[in-house]
Length: 187
Image 1 (spheres, rainbow, N blue to C red):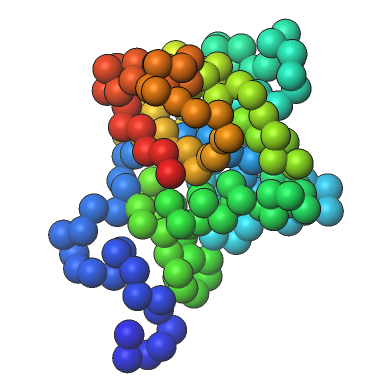
Image 2: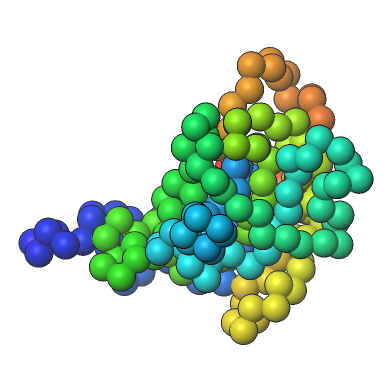
């Protein structure tokens, strides 16, 4: 823009552009750095954005977040992942921080942090995490704004060397999420 203080993005395109009001977006990735955790500060663009979440990185179904549970996993920016989920969450719903610079696509949306990859970028419970999202698609997260309820979108910026014909467990879980009214975005 003329002031060179606002990064051109979808959010600045005009008053009728949707900004994510009332939307809950589940980020299935490495965990979002949205709050201080030890030596890791919360990312200024994501503070207060996470409603809840789950952790599926323990490699043991007894240690996974149960469908009725909610935790806020963290992202420690491991050398393999380089804070990938935090980066993705910023693109999706980042506020742009105090300056508003480089706001996300839906800066008024709230996030659900579902950690499926550890700090080494490994994980195998994507289908279980999608199932958790389906189970929580109508959940009241306790946000003061009652419009932020449930999960409207599942976002997965993940890769795998496994070939898929669309009939593997994770693909079938994603199809079931769509059947239940959740938009699934995978890149």
